[in-house]
Amino acid sequence: MAQRHGSQAPARARVVIGVLLASSFVVVLNETIMTVAIPRLVTELEISVNTAQWLTTAYMLTMAIVIPTTGFIIQRFSTRAVFVTASAVFIGGTLVASVSPGFGLLLIARIVQASAAGVLLPLLMTTVLTLAPAARRGTLMGVVTIVLAVAPAIGPALAGLVLHYLPWRYLFVVLLPVAVGALIVGLVFLSNIGTTRRTTLDGLSVLLAVIGFGPLILGLSQLGEARHGAQRLLVASGLVVAGAGAVALFAWRQTFLVRKRDPVLDIRVFAAPQFRLSLSILLLCMAAYYGALLALPYYLQRVTGLDTLTTGMAMLPGGLLMGIMGPVAGRFFDRFGPRIPIVAGTGALIVFYACFAFLDTGTPVWLIAVLYAGFMGLGMGVISTPAVTSALEALPPERYSHGNAVIASLQQVAGAAGSAAFAAAFSLSALATGPGDDAGGELTAIRIGFGVSAGVAAVAFVLAFRVARKRRPDPDGAWPDHPDTEALVPSGTSTAPEAR
Image: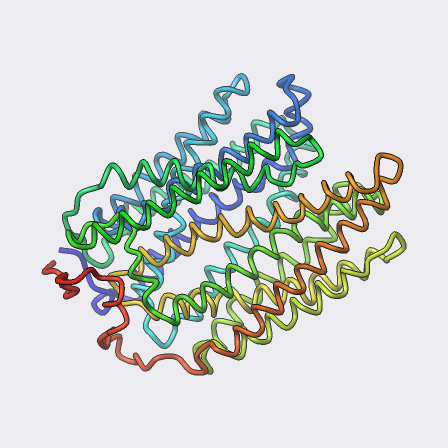
């Protein structure tokens, strides 16, 4: 019998969360650790830069396809079974990557890794919400933010250190001890959280997810390549339109499956107004953030002439501060609710983007690092935990896994859209200025991109004032009725929880 969070011993709960945090840290680190290795792989594997980029693109695409199914997976199978299976798959993919003789097998290994990562991250979020007492959810979600923010920040630095002394395959070897250790501890201590129920996986929904989220993300990632010609732009636009259409069909299919209580992704989560509002703010901020992650290194290296190591060190404090602010924002959320930190965070982002819209070739690097850490790092660190926790607290517990899957899926889309917007600005500026003024065109594109991001952050800032000032009363973990969740249920369908 699966245990409810109320009967879970605090020590065991800490072990469960700790194991999931360690595994999630590894899979997030693995996502960014490859970026620094691209030049080395191009030389040693004798491949082009565009080919090597597929090691990152395929990872992102696979996660985008897998994540929408995690709501079903986490409800259908026990926590222990999902964790052990996903961890074993990730370890297997990492081991294959560490011995890959060429690009083909390495690409397959990255896809295997991503299929496990797409399950482990939503499992972590769902488990924390299930185990955490209502009064400490924000604090514990803040700890999760440390993992999700610090791992990408230190990934390039760790990769640079490894590649300075060892062959590129050791990028995967160094991940294995932590991943294997977390699996062993999980096998010994991990117990099942929440409850499971027998459901069937709808094959048509999975197919629509594959042909929807995959092409949508790929098309968005390629949409900024206008400088490569109208044909490339047309193909990317076609992928976006086709992917968006398939995603719409996927959503429609889920409303039909609600009648059977077996949706792959329960979109009734959108019926909760606070979920929609908090999610909208988060996605706006994430789109602008991912655009900045593309634009700022480009500016530092192409406009100011910094090397990759200095660029990484300039951006590292911002990533670390983002992680540090997660628990702080979480504790503030527990005491005062979500509105104040979200308003403060979106305000900080407006200041950051507005300042960076006036960058020039003489802007000091120290000032860039300070502004990036003090406003971007602080702003995103303050926003993420309250926005995600506020969104998920608007749902009944049995829909936590589906809410997490929706948030994770749409974050992938928002990130790709933000990156595509900045890439499009670069491409259009290059076309407008011509080949004789590359630096001027790139600087203009960066300024325009940051200006647009300031506008996006301003929209999020306005929406932040509509977020609930205080948290819903739920001191004992008892869940009140949710009349809003009836809105997406077809007529004649019951929403009463099934017997477990």
